[in-house]
Length: 458
Image (cartoon, rainbow, N blue to C red; front, side, top):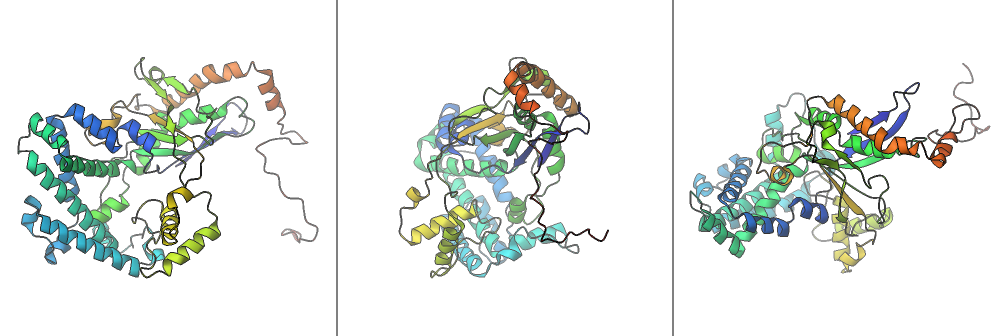
């Protein structure tokens, strides 16, 4: 979701800066630990909580997960019986796991990437029919079987410790058991999957356009990315958006709440970011509480793993190697197969060559991870414990929020910068009077006399 910041004070409203929000990276250890999503951090929280509310949350996530799985074909094929949902057995879990593996193999052997990449619904096809067809594909048969197997394992583990009316003592006993803790981790992964794709976003583009850089226009764009107007636009844009994966799992349209509650981003380098550094604003200016702030928090430094140091020729060679193996291509770049197809392709190719995969995937470039919490109950909402987000600011008048952010930026950053002679001289270097000297101007290539003009005859 891209946006422009324009200067209303000047003729033609020139662009101050550009910004864009994109889908978040699914796993960032530093961010997840700070939120409380990382398994170790969550188990520590659960040990402290150890309450009946935790038991209710576990049951709620499991029941919701099972209810959002299309099961009609499984019942027809006698893979499952109605009684299995009330009292699942180890044998049923084993059957589901074997079935999932077989369906995944069929998917890898038969899938055609071009046909399955976010396939659009035809005009003659209803939403129900479209998602039911998606659910019955080999890929989603496999995913549904595995999801049910996971939830059935959790139900068995919870049943060993929790009664119909759980007590705090029962919850503590669950937390002390290895199987119980593994069940909690499984529920945590499901809760995270339900929220990460819609309640969070990464700032993927953010910066000032010349000549607004010297007067810190980038800081204005950064804070506007977290403004009430952007949050309202996000909610409006995705309020009716049917979730691709959840709907394909359920065989019916599933729409998640489009409440944007957290923004993440990283620095370009590992030494800091002048754009995000010291970026904080009192929530009171946005109709919030005086003792709270809208702030870019430094959450830590990211791990140095990735694929950016692998050239396209290397990637193509590794993919070709995997395709020529006995099992064929395992990563088809089809939406729903899993995150980071390129990383998975490279990893599998390196594994086939018996090379030190982890060492080769380490590029060594650490980056600072930033987070911008937009609500007070961040952990509880992102875990699904709270149904509604509690925003740090007033959302009733988004445009007033934008004006408040601009006013804050002018006082905090622009006014001091206008006293800086060096910044003013850098701005003065840009001119729209001939000869044009403007850093945002696109310089065209010199005219080639050997090329015929398209407009010679006009």
